Length: 232
Image 1 (tube, rainbow, N blue to C red):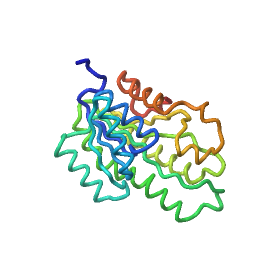
Image 2: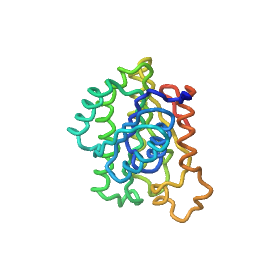
Image 3: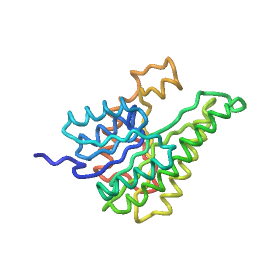
Image 4: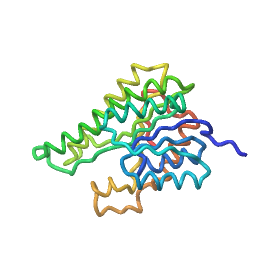
């Protein structure tokens, strides 16, 4: 059997049921990693499992809302009991509020974005950090975006800026022990982008599977360093 680039690794992917997270989880599974796929959408997770199995890989599906603190604690305990560690954590989960002018941002949408995109990321770090430290060459990758200053993107930009700040702080705190970095995917024809840019020429965008393949290649070849912001 030909050795695959991620054979034997445990890859945790949060936000795995659609878009870039789905494609990356599928690519990691095809590369030999056992994928722990976390998302709220059961149908998307089942579709992912079918794709990973078809490529000869394996996955464990975890239907879970990342704002559920007790569920995150149970997830961490279950991963430790079954696998003992996590080699790679990829976080792509995002709640994207409707585009609104800054002065008209809906309070409920803002609160939901803060809970899902900022608070939940910190709670995930709390759970996943000890599992990564038990791996030989642990890596945490947080999907980033360059939305700063884009009109009507205030709520989304707040979330991504806060995620970036938290990621860089974590990277500085764990330097030499973990590789913690941001990855910036190219513009892709995702459902999220369609909401932000309706009517654009989607054929001109980078295919999602191609972006996922670039990430797996960067991981496998050691191109990502701690504290970095890597464009795919």
